[in-house]
Length: 150
Image (cartoon, rainbow, N blue to C red; front, side, top):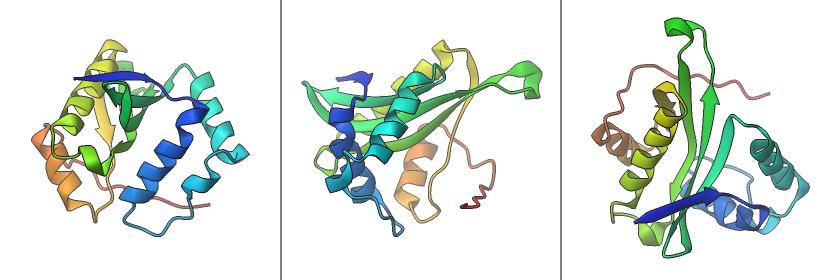
């Protein structure tokens, strides 16, 4: 069984290492730089925002995964709030043990408890295993995503 807690700056090397380990595109993130002001400030901004959470999933006190939850107000559907799940990662040594499913079920329930009427996420088009994983959890491919880097 997993337990969940807010990420701290001490968790940044773990989180950045998971991001790098899972990346299917070229990125310049480096776990060796995890203490840099850019990462520390980003985590501080997430922590300070009551509609954001960066969470660590632990098994027997050992970090095994992470994810970010954002709670988004909206005007569609009579002001329905949405939960956005991002930065979803399970350490390679702990995959295929049901932990990702457990973590995602917990994240969905956390969004429900916050009053969200929908949970959404994006996944890189190249991550076909992740797409099958999310579909098994009940997520539907309902939209096409677009990004514009600035």
